[in-house]
Image 1: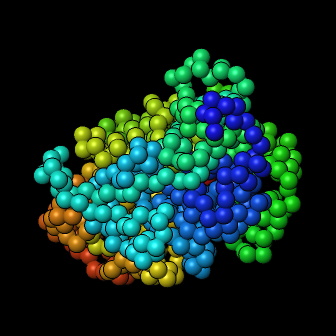
Image 2: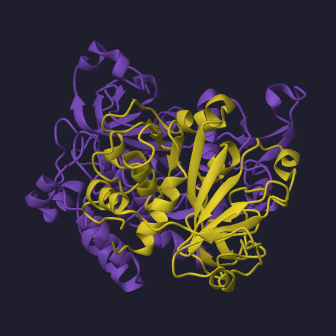
Image 3: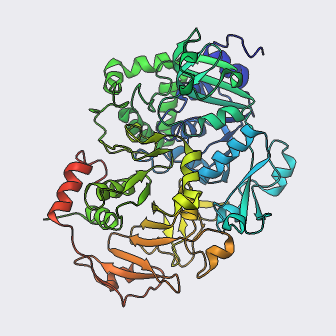
Length: 325
Length: 253
């Protein structure tokens, strides 16, 4: 692709072209904030299976992808969304029923793995997890790792500090780089070439975006000119990383998007109620995803009133008066 | 003034936080404890989130560490890399107090938040480490919330997610971890601390109406109770600030 080209496309085509069965995927956001939910729902709608998913604490999006049967392998730090699901419900079921293979890391380790991928190096060191079962217990076996070219031979490696006791550090843990086939993020603003502006916390979106072979961006505001270049200090991801840009207002819904809208407590509570039972969850998938043609369809069925309730206060970035009980 | 056990736990943990502490907190009761400390006994403490926000205004109680409420009027909004680096950095890490919770704890304060049963054939799967292992590995001291139950205070953990003192004196250093480790365990019945020499948990305090024996009955392993005394109940001032300022919508309480 010509990196300077206009990358504006629609979600159906972007997902169909890049998110293929068996691909290695990562999604942006954290627990109940800025998950690329419209894209997650489109992946589910297109019934793309056997995905190898990399997550730190991506929460809602991970649980829905796992629940819909799209995920074969999951490397993750945290399967939860805070108050709404202390442990993600479909994630928990899938692991207990051995429907997915899982590998556990910590949040910092997963973030470093994306960073290493974005830097073009095979691993990065940390002091996190020395002496714990994150080091000792492997979800993906040595055999599987050796037989799978896209997965490193080892989960991680403990190394004595080659600089002696420099920085008062006796040994470190090396975590392997991740270069996902595809990363999908949702941002507040993007332009036609794929320059991105994220308001609020970036989580690990920037590292995930820059580590990926293909980057799909969904955005609240799409600019068809070079307006974002007028204030470049506020842009986190330059267009050279981008492959597809899709305009989807409320594209993180039902998770929050700072400065635009809050999470929808009604949706998230209803989700966790329905996720608890297989039959109810199938109804959820049918009604909210399969029977909808697009994210717009889902938003229409949620209705104007609920979307107005979660609209962010201009100065606070969230909905101050939202009833979250 | 009447109070609930959850209020007691929150306030007991909050009392452990001092001015100038940088407090790492997760979701739920740990976030409420950090907010309570800031509003009651340690107004100069600083709340800090693994997602990258520091000194957030917290006008409203966040329901997750990625809640947009932590992004409003923080000192800086960054990301996970910056947050965990701040903890791993020994200059800043020395000032950080982590508040954690878990499904299981052992006598050395090691925590399990990953599985019950075998890792490959789990009976129950939990969320996993998140940032807990990173925090427990890096920071100078941690406060741990637990429910006082035999199945949670285990002789042997099913999975060691977050390091406490590992298998005893010197073990953190031997493994390559920085110093630090668990400082207090706050439960619905009392408070435990860790012996300077043996690194083992001992009973420091029990709540009004609870005896040290009640606490021992709700643990799989035995701990020293000879140093325990009754914990002061919440004051009316503490309760009022907790209820009216920290969680008026009763989202956690």
